Length: 276
Image 1 (cartoon, rainbow, N blue to C red):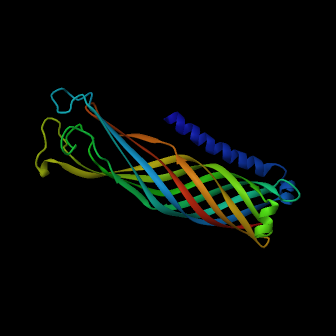
Image 2: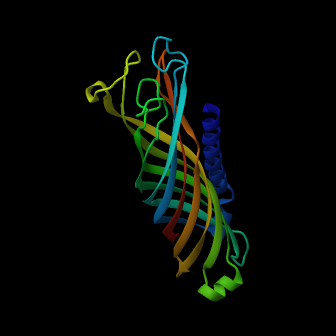
Image 3: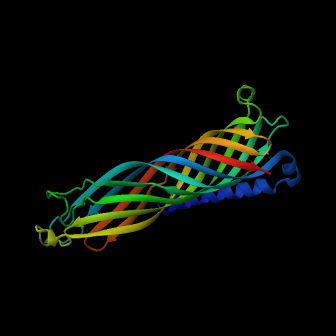
């Protein structure tokens, strides 16, 4: 897993370095054939999160209940959220007629909307919440903020210009992102393995919280229309696939409880950019 995360971080740095190289090549030519821009965005996203948990009791002493068992439980949930942020980029014209262009963009976003669900649990007891079982926890994931680097290829075909007027064009995009989020888990279960909990006071309840970092790739496309010479309005659709995150939430000689998070989002955003 560490190697996978390292590769995703490397991909992010490769795009950043590539952007720096683009900025550094032939500054005079860039000044004549391209433009820097700043902008703001707002959008909505449909987010899907998958949460899984395994309880491994293979090392639990034989005198304990549930000794030697492995239980697994998982759940998925979706939520519509929103986002807003700022962006900066560079657009390089590839031909004298301004039909084709390349762009590179960096952006930062804040996010709203919390995805929540309940693990069904797994075990032999009726409540699946005895020691060594996979308890039916309630969970939620709150997206906080993200940032990323995006490469774009655009075209302004004659039919679109005749339909929407000068300065209209399509573009395709691809890039990488980092998303910071928080996972909260509300649990209720039996904390002791040498006796069955029966009365409510024998069970323990609490909330665990974990900071999560997702590295993701994103792809999509958009439509841009210039308003005058300096202002561009964009409508953009993106699909983002998060990289799977694994962690050990509780680990000792008796029982191990690894969990994982995975997810994706599909979003639509509106952007306003100012070219310089």
